[in-house]
Image (cartoon, rainbow, N blue to C red; front, side, top):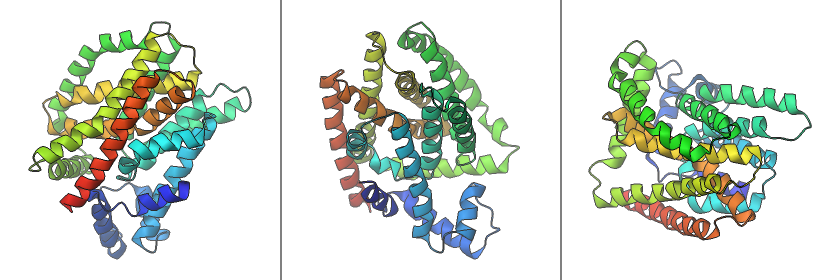
Length: 327
């Protein structure tokens, strides 16, 4: 199954980023010192490891899948069930961007740190912490993901029910994000690298979401419905005060926070915040897979889980058909 998933990631040419990375690979292979928004790790792979573009993707997405497998193993999950939900609803976006590697790294680190097993506790904590720090160097947007993970971990150890805390924090999210991104020009003006990343992301977002009409709008809605339904499942678990391992409780909190903050960003008057909103929604891929699989295994909120699964299948099918239509 992992091999088939890897092949899918290698040939995900229905996404604009596949061709974007191909162009970057060709340019950097011919001119290794050209200015680029890629992180140094990817430049090293291009110049020292990958003789062609497919080897580059093999290294990046192969490493990401190893980290994903390690996450499932650390959390003692049924890998068959987890991969079923993953393929049904989220694989198409997992194969899309290099941010996948940063996402896989930081959630693997989260699983290692929150695992409650008494064996090798300190080595797991140390390795997980290193992995989460390294995630930032694999994609700059990981810093927001890491902040959300820290918040989720804190919420998982407090006694107050998480969903109530999150509801109370929503106004603070709005105020904080509005203040940060209204002044985004000042934030990036002294850093050409970050400015280039923001501009590039904005162009990609514009190309994907503008002038596509109803088809693109439906694509966006169908992609996000499973995220919202899975987050609602997490809220129900919190509301029902169900006992669950700390690692799963933390991932449920991560799922809720990602969806809440992504939604808040949609209402902040900045183009770059909407780009970040897309990124954070897609950071939900691994937490959603874990939460849905956990609920299925423990027969929790099964009706909602089945509904989410159907929307996952419909969404993935539409994404593929629409992508081939646009090509």
